[in-house]
Length: 305
Image (cartoon, rainbow, N blue to C red; front, side, top):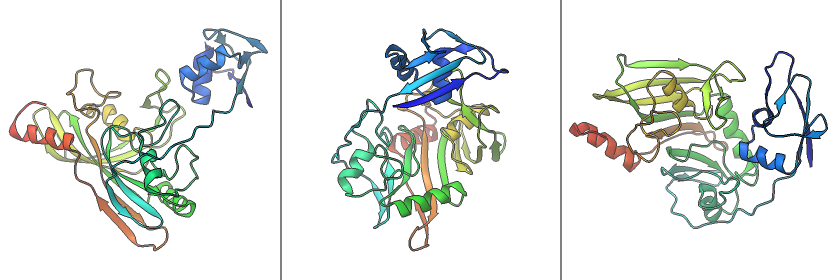
């Protein structure tokens, strides 16, 4: 069992115990509640309620039991494989497919399908994420690199880190633009009010840069192409909300009243990288998801979404 000790700094405001632990360790509120109920979180050596206020110099001790080992089982799945060789695959992920398993969701993911298709995948990200170098959200469609061995995984990870792996996305956003190009340079960190969301902030944030080009303006929307210079969680979704052009259908970052598009209309359309073994420059494109395609067709006809 891992033992973690946490304290609130002198200049930090008082905060609820459950929120404090959740924020410091990036654990879900449900996970923190379970730890509290099991007596695994102590304040100055005593069991306290979730609502207890943590003050500067209070010692919060968290006993983290190891997560239950789970067998991730192979599942037969129709995968849209754009490219495959001995080192890697490029997958065109459909909208609605979760990339990797998580507690409470161990089946029906892309990883389950990959384990059926491939006997070996890189293990650098652990048994829950074999082969996964980068991810795209459940309701984002498009291209994803999957590595079959650790050498390929390390090489592609390095390209992502040094920004030589290029990724472009297509998105339909609210409100037309008055200009054709733009760059959003705004740091992104976890939203302190909602730990399931990210936000533009200077606090505990990382650099985030998104370039975009307006492909076409409609009456109430704009069709854009985004290029990532960094790869933060929910980066395009957060940045487009930040400039008041949230992505259509986005359940986290768009308006409450938004067209029913089964999630955000965001598609990873293009990816470029250098092959980890041959050193050949690889470039792939993927057509729009049918739901996204239909939305554009409706706008072209002058219909509402």
